[in-house]
Image (cartoon, rainbow, N blue to C red; front, side, top):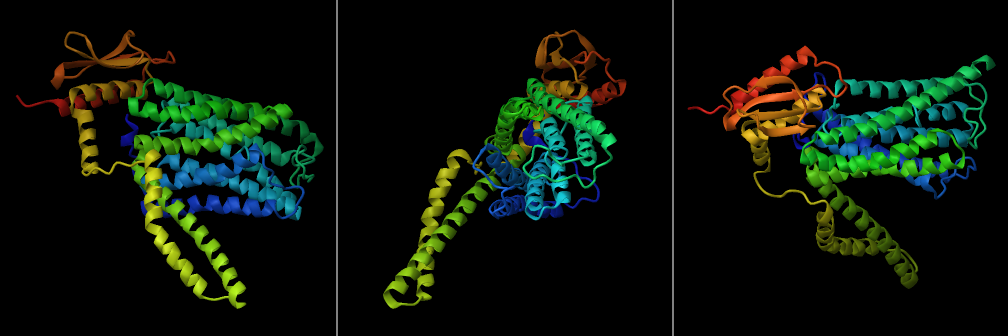
Length: 466
């Protein structure tokens, strides 16, 4: 299935406009969290200082970029799982750091304890699910749901162990605070087992989720493959480094954690590149305009502030007092800069984030979607790839009356275990052949019946009157 035609079905009780407004608010909330963290880090508390290192860069970039990209996607796809997972990851990390900074500042053990939940138990399962459903909001097979469930269970185990562990909240942290919810000392061993087991489940789930992108790549179309390459590159870098950091192996894990956070911060950037270069979710125009006018606003605001200050100083030096004329003159200068600066920014942004300005864009996309169903070659390719994806098969092929493959997906040739005729279809399409499942299990009869119905619908769509 081409990622450019992703459409998440509407769900009862969810107003898309409210979700769009909520997504916009949460997109800006990440920036607000980063500012709050910077304020807490500069409050003079020796236990919470923002140092110029890899973890700080990775955390702050993740807190801002994840909700920002997710909020942009929500504006065009309010029910997109990918978008809400991005927002959830960034906001969760931001809440964790804000709680930790606040707890360190006021010496609140409860705030420090709650912060622990937002560093592993909450974002790790969300990252796992993001890797499992990108780019089309769907799992590559029903069994992959177990990976997401295992990650959630691992996060829950880690969280419960952290809440119940006697003694210090985090023995390795600079803030020495005793766990206010700690159980008796007899629970110490069980809590450590839960934390280590949760860590292991989270790590394995992350690695499997990253691997799912490579499996998805094998049966994907050319556009989806291009999109997956970006996210797979980041996942291949982030997952192993975060896995090493979870092993708690001293300086090696510390370095791996910093690198992992930087790679993690690149994930929304990779998704943004996939969106703008390959029209994923059709929001490339929105991102283009956001970059242009966001940069324009920031530059003009900086110019205005600096120019007002400079002009006021000049008036004070010449007249001994401030003057409103400085503001008026600066406003005129900024107004004259608006048009040429906007054109310059558009030319720079369009080089990397160009959107399609041709007319009939919506109609053109609709025609492409129809052709992917009724044009024989495209329909055959789509039918084969969807069969591999939905049935978890090793491979599939649509063949003509002579048994020659017209389109294939996955591994082919393989011994077919399912053969479904394509009656009366145009273009010489005669049958769909589907290989055995990749996991060795037999095909679900219900899935075969549903596929047979799909084949009949495809044949009906391609049938031409005599």
